[in-house]
Length: 342
Image (cartoon, rainbow, N blue to C red; front, side):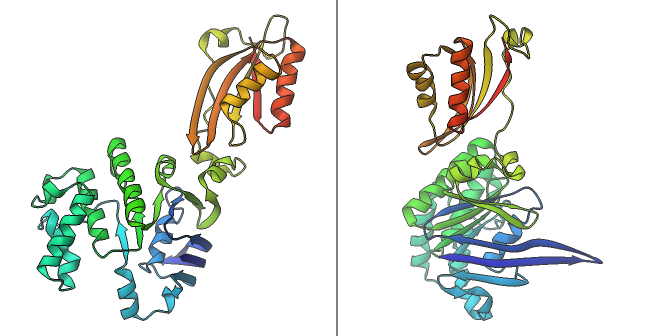
Protein backbone atom coordinates (compact mmCIF):
# COMPACT_ATOMS: atom_id res chain seq x y z
CA UNK A 1 0.00 0.00 0.00
CA UNK A 2 2.74 2.48 1.01
CA UNK A 3 6.19 2.35 -0.54
CA UNK A 4 8.76 4.81 0.74
CA UNK A 5 11.71 4.45 -1.61
CA UNK A 6 15.18 5.90 -1.04
CA UNK A 7 13.96 9.08 0.61
CA UNK A 8 16.54 11.72 1.55
CA UNK A 9 16.01 15.13 3.09
CA UNK A 10 18.57 17.80 4.02
CA UNK A 11 17.75 20.96 5.97
CA UNK A 12 19.88 24.06 5.45
CA UNK A 13 20.28 26.58 8.25
CA UNK A 14 22.57 29.55 7.71
CA UNK A 15 25.92 28.03 6.79
CA UNK A 16 25.14 24.56 8.14
CA UNK A 17 23.37 21.59 6.59
CA UNK A 18 21.68 18.75 8.43
CA UNK A 19 20.72 15.49 6.73
CA UNK A 20 17.50 14.43 8.43
CA UNK A 21 16.87 11.41 6.18
CA UNK A 22 19.43 9.38 4.28
CA UNK A 23 18.18 6.89 1.66
CA UNK A 24 15.28 5.59 3.77
CA UNK A 25 13.06 2.85 2.33
CA UNK A 26 10.04 1.33 4.06
CA UNK A 27 6.96 -0.66 3.03
CA UNK A 28 3.64 -0.62 4.89
CA UNK A 29 0.90 -3.12 4.08
CA UNK A 30 -2.78 -2.21 3.99
CA UNK A 31 -4.46 -2.55 7.40
CA UNK A 32 -1.17 -2.79 9.31
CA UNK A 33 -0.06 -0.80 12.36
CA UNK A 34 3.59 0.15 11.92
CA UNK A 35 5.64 2.02 14.51
CA UNK A 36 8.74 4.07 13.73
CA UNK A 37 10.88 4.41 16.83
CA UNK A 38 13.92 6.56 17.38
CA UNK A 39 15.50 9.06 19.74
CA UNK A 40 14.99 12.82 19.46
CA UNK A 41 16.59 14.09 16.26
CA UNK A 42 16.66 10.65 14.65
CA UNK A 43 14.54 11.82 11.71
CA UNK A 44 11.28 10.05 12.53
CA UNK A 45 9.08 13.19 12.45
CA UNK A 46 10.60 14.23 9.14
CA UNK A 47 9.97 10.75 7.77
CA UNK A 48 6.29 10.63 8.70
CA UNK A 49 5.75 14.14 7.31
CA UNK A 50 7.15 13.09 3.95
CA UNK A 51 4.38 10.51 3.56
CA UNK A 52 1.78 13.20 2.82
CA UNK A 53 4.46 15.63 1.57
CA UNK A 54 4.18 18.09 4.43
CA UNK A 55 7.94 17.76 4.01
CA UNK A 56 8.94 17.28 0.39
CA UNK A 57 12.00 15.00 0.15
CA UNK A 58 15.05 16.01 -1.88
CA UNK A 59 15.00 12.65 -3.64
CA UNK A 60 13.15 9.34 -3.64
CA UNK A 61 9.55 8.26 -4.12
CA UNK A 62 6.40 8.13 -1.99
CA UNK A 63 4.08 5.63 -3.65
CA UNK A 64 0.65 5.12 -2.06
CA UNK A 65 -1.97 2.93 -3.71
CA UNK A 66 0.10 2.96 -6.88
CA UNK A 67 0.42 6.75 -7.08
CA UNK A 68 3.75 8.53 -6.78
CA UNK A 69 2.81 11.50 -4.61
CA UNK A 70 5.87 13.48 -5.66
CA UNK A 71 4.61 13.48 -9.26
CA UNK A 72 1.09 14.69 -8.39
CA UNK A 73 -0.11 18.19 -9.17
CA UNK A 74 -1.06 20.49 -6.29
CA UNK A 75 -4.75 19.81 -6.89
CA UNK A 76 -4.25 16.05 -7.04
CA UNK A 77 -2.11 16.09 -3.88
CA UNK A 78 -4.71 18.12 -1.99
CA UNK A 79 -7.36 15.53 -2.90
CA UNK A 80 -5.15 12.63 -1.75
CA UNK A 81 -4.29 14.36 1.53
CA UNK A 82 -7.97 14.41 2.50
CA UNK A 83 -7.78 10.62 2.74
CA UNK A 84 -4.76 10.70 5.03
CA UNK A 85 -5.61 11.66 8.60
CA UNK A 86 -2.95 13.07 10.91
CA UNK A 87 -2.78 13.23 14.70
CA UNK A 88 -0.28 15.50 16.44
CA UNK A 89 1.30 15.54 19.88
CA UNK A 90 -0.32 18.83 20.94
CA UNK A 91 -3.85 18.25 19.58
CA UNK A 92 -4.06 21.55 17.58
CA UNK A 93 -7.73 22.12 18.44
CA UNK A 94 -9.41 25.47 17.85
CA UNK A 95 -10.26 26.92 21.25
CA UNK A 96 -13.11 29.04 19.89
CA UNK A 97 -14.99 26.01 18.51
CA UNK A 98 -16.85 23.29 20.38
CA UNK A 99 -15.85 19.65 20.21
CA UNK A 100 -18.52 19.09 17.55
CA UNK A 101 -17.39 22.08 15.52
CA UNK A 102 -13.71 21.09 15.68
CA UNK A 103 -14.53 17.71 14.19
CA UNK A 104 -16.92 19.22 11.64
CA UNK A 105 -14.57 21.92 10.33
CA UNK A 106 -13.18 19.98 7.37
CA UNK A 107 -16.67 18.95 6.26
CA UNK A 108 -17.88 22.53 6.49
CA UNK A 109 -15.03 23.72 4.30
CA UNK A 110 -16.05 21.08 1.72
CA UNK A 111 -19.67 22.39 1.84
CA UNK A 112 -21.07 19.08 3.05
CA UNK A 113 -24.79 19.27 3.97
CA UNK A 114 -25.71 19.93 7.61
CA UNK A 115 -27.57 16.63 7.89
CA UNK A 116 -24.51 14.71 6.68
CA UNK A 117 -22.24 16.67 9.02
CA UNK A 118 -24.49 15.91 11.98
CA UNK A 119 -24.61 12.22 11.10
CA UNK A 120 -20.88 11.89 10.53
CA UNK A 121 -19.65 13.91 13.49
CA UNK A 122 -22.01 12.27 15.98
CA UNK A 123 -20.98 8.85 14.69
CA UNK A 124 -17.30 9.67 15.18
CA UNK A 125 -17.81 11.18 18.62
CA UNK A 126 -19.51 7.93 19.62
CA UNK A 127 -16.56 5.91 18.31
CA UNK A 128 -14.09 7.95 20.37
CA UNK A 129 -16.34 7.97 23.44
CA UNK A 130 -17.14 11.69 23.51
CA UNK A 131 -20.78 11.84 22.43
CA UNK A 132 -21.63 13.64 25.71
CA UNK A 133 -18.94 16.31 25.10
CA UNK A 134 -20.18 17.55 21.72
CA UNK A 135 -21.03 21.05 22.98
CA UNK A 136 -18.02 21.46 25.28
CA UNK A 137 -15.01 23.62 24.45
CA UNK A 138 -11.42 22.31 24.45
CA UNK A 139 -10.49 24.26 27.59
CA UNK A 140 -12.82 22.04 29.66
CA UNK A 141 -11.34 18.77 28.38
CA UNK A 142 -8.55 16.60 29.74
CA UNK A 143 -5.50 15.83 27.62
CA UNK A 144 -6.86 12.42 26.72
CA UNK A 145 -10.24 13.86 25.73
CA UNK A 146 -8.54 16.48 23.53
CA UNK A 147 -6.61 13.75 21.75
CA UNK A 148 -9.84 11.82 21.19
CA UNK A 149 -11.31 14.92 19.55
CA UNK A 150 -8.19 15.13 17.37
CA UNK A 151 -8.62 11.47 16.40
CA UNK A 152 -12.28 12.02 15.48
CA UNK A 153 -11.24 15.04 13.40
CA UNK A 154 -8.61 12.95 11.62
CA UNK A 155 -11.24 10.34 10.75
CA UNK A 156 -13.87 12.72 9.41
CA UNK A 157 -12.95 12.29 5.72
CA UNK A 158 -12.93 8.47 5.88
CA UNK A 159 -9.14 8.13 5.56
CA UNK A 160 -7.43 4.94 4.50
CA UNK A 161 -4.26 5.99 6.36
CA UNK A 162 -3.71 7.56 9.79
CA UNK A 163 -0.39 9.23 10.61
CA UNK A 164 0.36 9.66 14.32
CA UNK A 165 3.15 12.09 15.22
CA UNK A 166 4.06 11.33 18.86
CA UNK A 167 0.31 11.21 19.56
CA UNK A 168 0.68 10.08 23.19
CA UNK A 169 3.83 11.92 24.29
CA UNK A 170 1.91 14.64 26.16
CA UNK A 171 -0.29 12.15 28.03
CA UNK A 172 0.06 10.29 31.33
CA UNK A 173 0.59 6.49 31.23
CA UNK A 174 -3.03 5.51 31.90
CA UNK A 175 -4.38 7.93 29.29
CA UNK A 176 -1.71 6.78 26.84
CA UNK A 177 -2.94 3.20 27.14
CA UNK A 178 -6.55 4.26 26.54
CA UNK A 179 -5.58 6.22 23.40
CA UNK A 180 -3.51 3.31 22.09
CA UNK A 181 -6.43 0.94 22.67
CA UNK A 182 -8.66 3.36 20.78
CA UNK A 183 -6.22 3.39 17.84
CA UNK A 184 -6.16 -0.41 17.77
CA UNK A 185 -9.97 -0.51 17.88
CA UNK A 186 -10.15 1.96 14.99
CA UNK A 187 -7.66 -0.12 13.02
CA UNK A 188 -9.71 -3.27 13.53
CA UNK A 189 -13.16 -1.70 13.16
CA UNK A 190 -12.49 0.57 10.20
CA UNK A 191 -9.55 -1.21 8.57
CA UNK A 192 -7.45 1.96 8.58
CA UNK A 193 -3.69 1.58 8.16
CA UNK A 194 -1.78 3.33 10.95
CA UNK A 195 1.77 4.65 10.80
CA UNK A 196 3.00 6.12 14.06
CA UNK A 197 6.23 7.51 15.43
CA UNK A 198 7.38 7.37 19.02
CA UNK A 199 10.45 7.28 21.22
CA UNK A 200 8.79 4.88 23.68
CA UNK A 201 9.10 1.13 23.31
CA UNK A 202 6.00 0.67 25.50
CA UNK A 203 3.91 2.37 22.80
CA UNK A 204 5.34 0.01 20.17
CA UNK A 205 4.64 -3.05 22.33
CA UNK A 206 1.08 -1.96 23.05
CA UNK A 207 -0.20 -1.36 19.54
CA UNK A 208 2.22 -2.10 16.66
CA UNK A 209 2.46 -5.21 14.48
CA UNK A 210 5.65 -4.09 12.74
CA UNK A 211 8.49 -1.79 13.74
CA UNK A 212 11.11 0.33 12.01
CA UNK A 213 14.08 1.70 13.95
CA UNK A 214 15.59 4.97 12.74
CA UNK A 215 18.73 6.74 13.95
CA UNK A 216 20.62 9.71 12.54
CA UNK A 217 18.45 9.72 9.45
CA UNK A 218 19.07 6.07 8.56
CA UNK A 219 16.71 3.13 8.85
CA UNK A 220 18.57 0.60 10.98
CA UNK A 221 16.09 -2.26 11.12
CA UNK A 222 12.52 -3.20 10.27
CA UNK A 223 10.40 -6.25 10.97
CA UNK A 224 8.01 -7.72 13.49
CA UNK A 225 8.28 -6.70 17.12
CA UNK A 226 9.73 -10.11 17.98
CA UNK A 227 12.40 -9.77 15.28
CA UNK A 228 13.40 -6.30 16.44
CA UNK A 229 13.56 -7.24 20.11
CA UNK A 230 15.63 -10.31 19.24
CA UNK A 231 18.29 -8.15 17.56
CA UNK A 232 20.61 -7.52 20.50
CA UNK A 233 23.61 -6.69 18.33
CA UNK A 234 22.54 -3.20 17.33
CA UNK A 235 23.40 -0.73 20.13
CA UNK A 236 20.48 1.59 19.30
CA UNK A 237 17.95 -1.22 19.45
CA UNK A 238 19.51 -2.46 22.66
CA UNK A 239 18.91 0.93 24.30
CA UNK A 240 15.18 0.68 23.61
CA UNK A 241 14.91 -2.77 25.17
CA UNK A 242 14.94 -3.25 28.91
CA UNK A 243 18.49 -4.44 29.41
CA UNK A 244 18.92 -3.61 33.09
CA UNK A 245 21.10 -6.06 35.00
CA UNK A 246 19.02 -8.00 37.47
CA UNK A 247 20.04 -7.17 41.02
CA UNK A 248 21.05 -10.11 43.18
CA UNK A 249 19.11 -10.46 46.46
CA UNK A 250 21.02 -8.79 49.29
CA UNK A 251 21.47 -11.88 51.46
CA UNK A 252 23.07 -13.76 48.56
CA UNK A 253 25.10 -10.81 47.35
CA UNK A 254 26.85 -10.58 50.72
CA UNK A 255 28.33 -14.06 50.37
CA UNK A 256 28.70 -14.10 46.60
CA UNK A 257 32.09 -15.42 45.45
CA UNK A 258 33.66 -14.93 42.02
CA UNK A 259 35.16 -18.42 41.86
CA UNK A 260 33.48 -21.79 42.52
CA UNK A 261 33.98 -23.36 45.94
CA UNK A 262 32.68 -26.46 47.70
CA UNK A 263 29.18 -25.90 49.00
CA UNK A 264 28.47 -22.92 46.72
CA UNK A 265 26.13 -22.92 43.76
CA UNK A 266 26.26 -20.78 40.59
CA UNK A 267 23.92 -17.82 40.12
CA UNK A 268 23.05 -17.63 36.43
CA UNK A 269 21.37 -14.71 34.68
CA UNK A 270 19.47 -15.99 31.64
CA UNK A 271 18.21 -13.78 28.83
CA UNK A 272 15.13 -15.23 27.22
CA UNK A 273 14.29 -15.14 23.54
CA UNK A 274 11.37 -16.15 21.37
CA UNK A 275 12.82 -19.62 20.71
CA UNK A 276 12.16 -21.06 24.16
CA UNK A 277 9.49 -20.43 26.75
CA UNK A 278 10.14 -19.98 30.47
CA UNK A 279 8.07 -23.06 31.17
CA UNK A 280 10.03 -25.25 28.75
CA UNK A 281 13.39 -24.03 30.00
CA UNK A 282 12.57 -24.73 33.65
CA UNK A 283 10.93 -28.09 32.96
CA UNK A 284 13.96 -29.17 30.88
CA UNK A 285 16.29 -28.34 33.77
CA UNK A 286 14.29 -30.31 36.30
CA UNK A 287 12.62 -33.10 34.32
CA UNK A 288 15.31 -33.88 31.74
CA UNK A 289 18.53 -32.97 33.54
CA UNK A 290 17.22 -33.56 37.09
CA UNK A 291 18.88 -30.36 38.31
CA UNK A 292 17.29 -28.65 41.33
CA UNK A 293 17.24 -24.87 41.16
CA UNK A 294 15.97 -21.71 42.87
CA UNK A 295 14.21 -19.12 40.77
CA UNK A 296 15.38 -15.93 42.44
CA UNK A 297 13.95 -13.35 40.06
CA UNK A 298 11.97 -13.20 36.84
CA UNK A 299 11.25 -10.25 34.56
CA UNK A 300 9.30 -11.76 31.68
CA UNK A 301 7.10 -10.17 29.04
CA UNK A 302 4.91 -12.02 26.57
CA UNK A 303 4.50 -10.70 23.04
CA UNK A 304 2.09 -12.90 21.13
CA UNK A 305 3.40 -16.45 21.47
CA UNK A 306 6.92 -15.33 22.40
CA UNK A 307 8.45 -14.34 25.70
CA UNK A 308 11.33 -11.99 26.39
CA UNK A 309 13.09 -10.89 29.55
CA UNK A 310 15.45 -12.28 32.15
CA UNK A 311 15.62 -14.92 34.84
CA UNK A 312 18.00 -15.18 37.76
CA UNK A 313 18.51 -18.82 38.71
CA UNK A 314 20.63 -20.54 41.32
CA UNK A 315 21.52 -24.00 40.01
CA UNK A 316 21.67 -26.37 42.99
CA UNK A 317 22.85 -29.61 41.46
CA UNK A 318 26.24 -31.25 41.65
CA UNK A 319 29.08 -29.45 39.84
CA UNK A 320 28.89 -31.74 36.82
CA UNK A 321 25.10 -31.39 36.63
CA UNK A 322 25.30 -27.61 36.76
CA UNK A 323 27.85 -27.65 33.93
CA UNK A 324 25.41 -29.73 31.87
CA UNK A 325 22.77 -27.05 32.38
CA UNK A 326 25.09 -24.29 31.16
CA UNK A 327 26.08 -26.49 28.19
CA UNK A 328 22.35 -26.88 27.42
CA UNK A 329 21.90 -23.08 27.48
CA UNK A 330 24.82 -22.57 25.13
CA UNK A 331 23.75 -25.32 22.73
CA UNK A 332 20.29 -23.76 22.45
CA UNK A 333 21.63 -20.20 22.02
CA UNK A 334 20.18 -19.08 25.33
CA UNK A 335 22.32 -16.19 26.50
CA UNK A 336 23.55 -16.83 30.04
CA UNK A 337 26.01 -15.26 32.45
CA UNK A 338 27.32 -16.78 35.69
CA UNK A 339 27.18 -13.87 38.16
CA UNK A 340 29.06 -15.69 40.89
CA UNK A 341 28.69 -18.49 43.43
CA UNK A 342 26.73 -18.49 46.68
